[in-house]
Image (cartoon, rainbow, N blue to C red):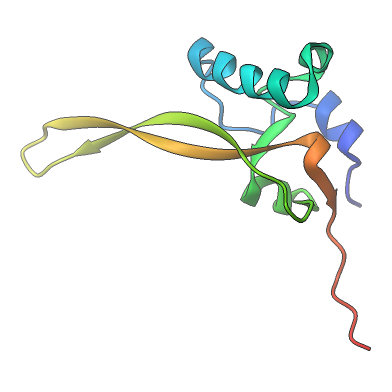
Length: 108
């Protein structure tokens, strides 16, 4: 049985967020700009803002026309000599307010 958005938000961590204060602030600022400062009380980086693929695995998809929130993660790449290179990668997140349940396409 699929969980509701409320159950997901109130439940345990479902994201890969690595407790970065900087990325939390970055996403919080975008939420404030779109939905107002009061919405920040509902923001939890562990449950309420997730990548597309994670929402789909939970039974939801972004509403048509939704624009993602931008975040950044640091990728570490090791070369043949063992040197580690770090570089930023943009992550596109969708906030729980942008979602609708996945429904199968019905043929007419």
